[in-house]
Image (cartoon, rainbow, N blue to C red):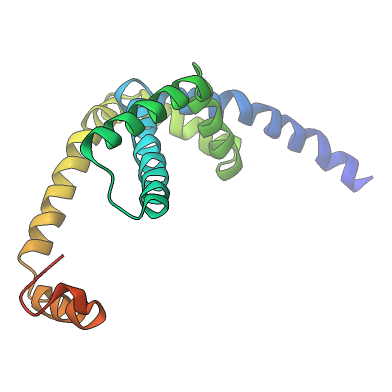
Length: 163
């Protein structure tokens, strides 16, 4: 009897998760954010296929071959990730990671003025963070040690060469 008393509210919470997760995914993956995720997936897929092709060919791909590969990957993703599919996948992930109350809180935050500002500035913050990390790496005191380690691990680089 105790199990029956717990089941209906639990089911109601699970049923509430789907629509909330879809709403959150729609907010999180609006316009540029969705394109950014899909571009990232496309770049990873092109890199993976490109690496396999280079291994098969025993040479690096030429620029024109990379362009051809990129076009093929773009067309594949356009066909595979039809309208709303990226959001649907993201909604499934949100529903697995958050309960209904948390999803409600997230939707409320992302529809608030500060939540919309976070969403609008996320690409700028990401780009500036990457630029800061690149600068930190370029000026790192550990760079000479890494280069020495790479030269020892990959003698093909030679004494004065870097990757």
